Amino acid sequence: MTIHWCGTGLSAIPGLRRLIEAGHDVTVWNRSVDKAKAAVGDLTEAIKAFDRDALAGDLKAGDLVVSMLPGEWHVPLAELCLEKGADFVSSSYIAPEMRALDAAAREKGLCVVNEIGLDPGIDHLMAHHLVAEYRASDAYDAGNDISFISYCGGIPKHPNPFRYKFSWSPLGVLKALRSPSRSIRDYSELNVARPWDAISSYSAPLPSPETFEVYPNRDSLPFIEDYRFDPAWPVKQFVRGTLRLNGWTEAWGDVFAEIETLSGPEGEARLKEMSDTFWDENAYDEGEPDRVVLCVGLKAEKAGVPVWHKTYVMDAWGDARGTAMARLVSVPVSLAVEAVLNREIPAGVTPAPHDPKLVSRFLAEVDRLAQHLQVVDHLA
Image 1 (cartoon, one colour):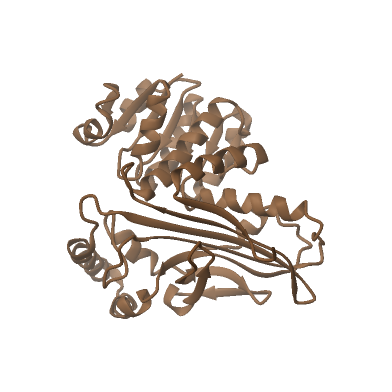
Image 2 (cartoon, rainbow, N blue to C red):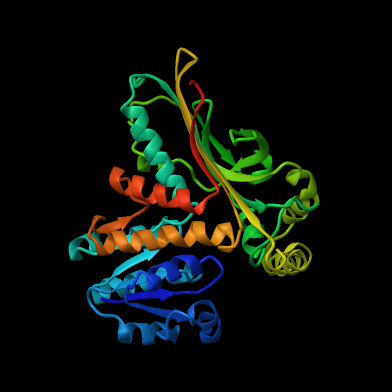
């Protein structure tokens, strides 16, 4: 059984190294062999130039493919796994085309695991923990009004005037700013065309409380079911979103105004130009620490009075182990790989596991990756 790890970008290395150091049979595939050798050449010589056909030639039934490549590769590699009888793991969101593979994966008894990085990934694990704890509490009542928040952000440990720094090309961040979102506010669906139309303030219950700017992203609504909410629960608020340093909205005001005017090929060209400029001016310096803050909160109210309210809080930053972002994305991927090999994850297309045993085990590992991890009880 071989693990075929595809992609050795910045967010892939700690998890990859962890699997190799644990003695697993790993073949590393990357478009640049030299970059892969620089990342893990001290641990392995099993490094090959990534090519779908070459991978297909090596892939055998019972193997496992990890895709840490750009998103457009995930579905083709998952399809290749189904064809060859291999399992698949990626950290990315489950695209509709990926979800469409569920029946075939179940029929063949194969695991196609996604959404097991940082966000999505660790946030899911925190949500599963909180929902299970609330359900088991004395305060539980199916009639309680439920509010749920999940905010995650990669931010500079040492703030800069732009209130943000880039670990890789800013183009993805710029394109995300053009995306609409769906969430729930005051029991009603909230549809937002652009993030800057719904920026609010959030006080994170860190050891020294900090206030951040937050906004909803993507479509939060499908996660109500994923997090095992009872359909009978009245949902007052449900939002998954992005967290940014205070002052981000003001610092990016001109960016928002220009993005709103861009369209067509000329707009795409301008986005690329903006991306290049931001990379020149606001990329992380060599060895400069990044920071990741993640807060997932669940509150239950009866007649407007909170009866259960806890927030899972994580604060992590770059240190001698490397960047916080890299270890928080890739180590959960490696944990999912081992869980698949141990047959602890069901067949089919699945996100981060909700099995309490795996949730506890994975979060215990996150505790070692982050400098601060705590469940805050707001009513204690």
